[in-house]
Amino acid sequence: AQSVAQPEDQVNVAEGNPLTVKCTYSVSGNPYLFWYVQYPNRGLQFLLKYITGDNLVKGSYGFEAEFNKSQTSFHLKKPSALVSDSALYFCAVRPTAPGAGSYQLTFGKGTKLSVIP
Amino acid sequence: GAVVSQHPSRVICKSGTSVKIECRSLDFQATTMFWYRQFPKQSLMLMATSNEGSKATYEQGVEKDKFLINHASLTLSTLTVTSAHPEDSSFYICSARATGGNSPLHFGNGTRLTVT
Image 1: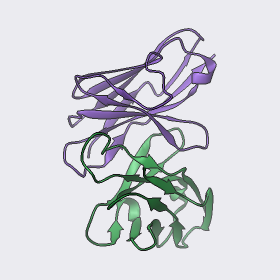
Image 2 (image 1 turned 90 degrees about the vertical axis):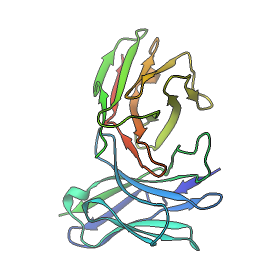
Image 3 (image 1 turned 120 degrees about the horizontal axis):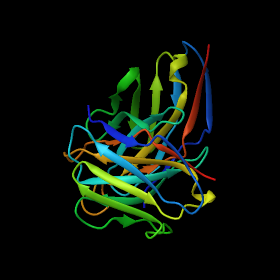
């Protein structure tokens, strides 16, 4: 079974500084990896995904993530944080094998990002 | 981009009543939709997978008779919480996947259910 770990419950960063939200995963075979963002009392918004190809994936709102197979990590990054980036961020993985359940996502517990003005 | 509409956004009901939550894919067809439950400060817990034209697949520990799911068309899935109790109070989120093998899931804005 696959799993996702987000080791930090909360990340605080000053506005304008680079930010990193960490994610490691465990899955059989090659992973499909995703990052989603959730604002208060809202659903999840898709940020970016890694399927195959370049290890550095660029997504919405200036976010990017780097897939590192040897470290089984998929950390989310942004060069310059904005106050409006403050939200809850979820890393997710799903299996690559086709069949029942192959589109189910397994989510990490989430990391609350606070960008301080 | 793909849009998923979830309604209502908030609902308050009395204990013992039933509540229906709708999830619609507005600009794409979704043969599969997923229903999640999110507890405060916790991650999303998959409740069930809704398949158009067939019975939903429930995750272990989720009562199928309590959480009724109907996926009658390619753009609509409903979750009915029957005989609601205060412990059913939670944030419920649906998601749908557009066609295409590697399409991401798109999520509704969620429904905050409060059972008094």
